Amino acid sequence: MIKKDLVSRATAILHDKDVRKDVPAIKSKLHIRDEDGNESQIVIRKEPKGYLFNESDVSAILDALCEAVVDGLREGQGCMLYNMGSIDIVNRAARTLKRVDGGGMCTVPEHLVPKFTCGKALRMAVKIYEAGLKDGADIPVPMEEEEDGD
Image (tube, rainbow, N blue to C red):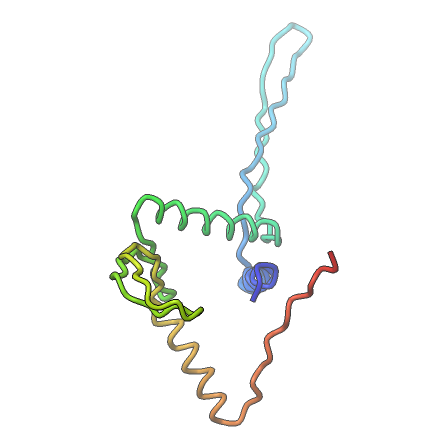
């Protein structure tokens, strides 16, 4: 799923659940003067409104989430999303690999890499999908992204 599809799906879920963003109420002040020069104010408060999230809102939230995860990894901190999984920094040990071009062996030194560990909700989603495949459901074919003719 590409970002555009993810944003569209998340927006649809927010609309289905009727999740709204609150916009604070605006106060209006009316200044009234009488003939004698006395002044008084009347404050009119409007009711706060809640608007449904649109795709640009969800896209901005998704971008901010990704940026926060990357910033956390830059600072050496992992990130955990409940039921989704966690992204941590792990140390990959040094190892020896065989070169593809037949040039012998090469040694890769140890280094830090990001590692994603899936959570319970993701594991259960895959098990449900797998059970559907065993029951004879059709396997969905992933859509190919369109190539630009540049």
